[in-house]
Amino acid sequence: MSEKTYSAREIVLSLFPGTDAVLVPLPEPYRFERTPEGLRLLRDGSELLLLAPIAAAGNASTQVLCDLCQRSAPRHYLQMFRAEVPGSKGRRYRYVSLCRDPGGCEARRSGGDTPVEVLLSRVLGN
Ligand SMILES: [Zn+2]
Image (cartoon, rainbow, N blue to C red; front, side, top):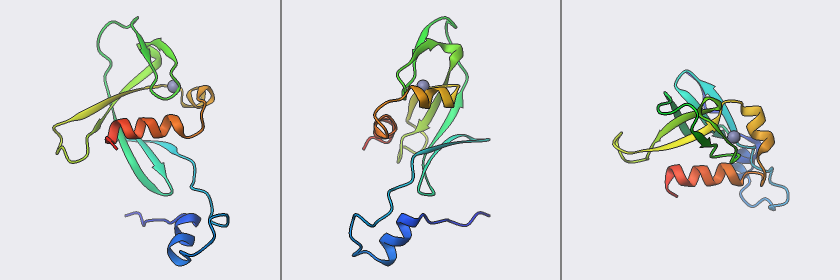
């Protein structure tokens, strides 16, 4: 069993809520982690999203767009994932395509955290 860990930001905000914003540590960067269940999106020790891989179907030469770096490539270079819509009790899913090469995908992204935040709002419906 894993214990919840807290980031420096969470500790400062919970113990010293009046701290000047300049002194509060910035949030940790978004982080993707591969697990047996799929791809987890984490920030500040919390899982924001679990993307379950699904098998590719259809014409292998069809170009597919990565939802993070906007690279267009044949299906072979991207992995399709699905995420359950919160509150749908397994009845609704959103589908996401991401590069199989996470390092290359991250290097092609621009706009800092924006691509990940857009993906999150699309999947979670915020
Ligand atoms: Zn990508």
